[in-house]
Amino acid sequence: DAGVTQSPTHLIKTRGQHVTLRCSPISGHKSVSWYQQVLGQGPQFIFQYYEKEERGRGNFPDRFSARQFPNYSSELNVNALLLGDSALYLCASSPTPGLAGGEQFFGPGTRLTVL
Amino acid sequence: QKEVEQNSGPLSVPEGAIASLNCTYSDRVSQSFFWYRQYSGKSPELIMSIYSNGDKEDGRFTAQLNKASQYVSLLIRDSQPSDSATYLCAVLSGSARQLTFGSGTQLTVLP
Figure 1 (cartoon, rainbow over the protein chains, first blue to last red):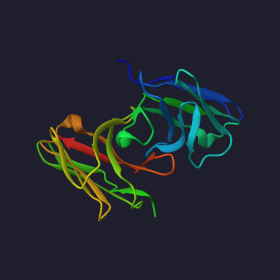
Figure 2 (figure 1 turned 90 degrees about the vertical axis):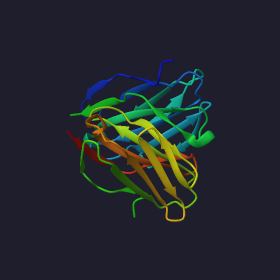
Figure 3 (figure 1 turned 90 degrees about the horizontal axis):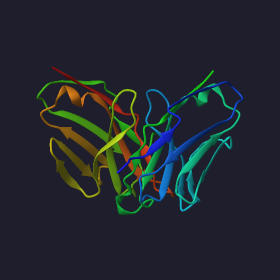
Figure 4 (figure 1 turned 180 degrees about the horizontal axis):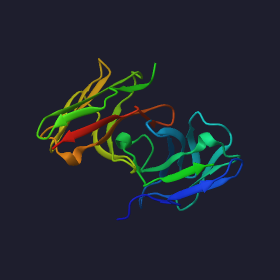
């Protein structure tokens, strides 16, 4: 079975631009979470979606938004990009949030560079 | 105080030795704990999960949990150069039961 997929792999944007990152979860998984990882730090929670509804949001500004589609894939949108948004954006898939132990499986990530 | 803290490292051990990685957490109601391995330039890979006090073994890996001390550790026996990576401790917490990560410990296994 395919794992979590993310696109694009790499992205270069300039300050003020907008970006959309995409994620497809493992088949049968209904929950998608987004994390931001800056160099030298652990991933930080941005959003969690389950059955197309937002289940949680981390401490990120309103420039960050996300949604989940009926096929459980998800998009993360970031508006008005800042240099500090440069990071690895990770999507994690789980069967059901918080149940059955809560194991989450990560995709390969999207490396975003803001110039 | 950080919610999840790991020994800062970097940690170097010779090949064949035991590597010990430690983590403490602040949320007493946390019930699920994970260790992820992250190779440079790659995404985190789940290697161990533990939910009950005590030890859990999987091959060369042993996770240990002490909820009273709010402490979780990972032991890697017979360390191999291929174990060289950053190890991330993660705790399931919060209203959405999201993962909260430590900043990671970089492990180098010397041949």
